[in-house]
Length: 416
View 1 (cartoon, helix red, strand yellow):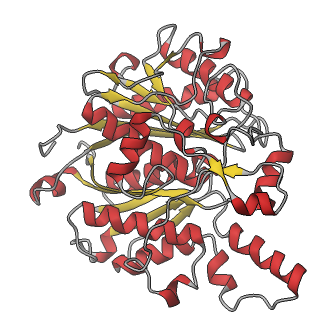
View 2: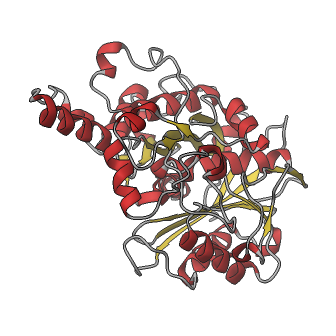
């Protein structure tokens, strides 16, 4: 018996590139960096004074003021993006399925760390009592719980933390539950909001961040020879996954399918990738095999592409291992939005699918070439047109966590 196919019927984002899917896609296609100086970081004498922040939006449609007080920003961004994805799928709050057959999967790298840092700062400086709702704000599972409560979903409500691969892991694991026949619908994605002086300083001391304080818009440079680290960002992205037969039966708009997923671990170093790219390449190959596709059938790659020297170099080697000397066209969304940590893989999967569906590959912002990119077909300058085709989205996290998704686009304007 063939396993159920998984359709993607809804998408929602709250990211530095925009708070709607349309706005975010336009920003990414324009290759327009969103990194900017953050007054709070300047005021705290932070060694890195810029980041990529989500533009202001009205949160009250997603949570009233009282509920907002009980939520960390990462959870609020997740709830908003997930709610948008459900609405985009044409589903009501109850999702239109048996509640026990609806699962929620959220990936996050830092969860409520921002709230904890803010509380510790307030306690140290002002002696202020800890907030009454500190515990529900810092719980790692808070975002998944909030989304499940919003939807009345009684299936598994799960949180995945695989560092920078968390969002992709959540989407892949949710898809596997549908393919195993255990669930009919999944709301899955990733979120993080780690922009505080303490967190930024910690990443700076790891030498992971770019230090271009005088030119933040030029700081995020995936695969460029002059890259010096990633730019911290915040944001959330979610998708609605359904059994394909169910989506077709209800006449849903189908963006495409989640056709392949794989994850593994470098087991090499807590913050550095395995230089030879062996296990990252194996993860890509396993995702392609899961989708029943060969490397030659991939139209383009949305790379992890952090803009750090070691990660981009290792990913370039891994792509060559998987695809040989001629890689598919390659893009990297972090040039525009920075690194959304737990939200990164989910946002990149959304962008990858929408671009594959439209037959276009976004340019990598700030890319001017470099030796580590010599074997890659990096798209730069302007978008590149191509025929709609399957796309590979890579996510590689601290701790050696690797997750790869293969997405097959549907027809623009058609049900599939």
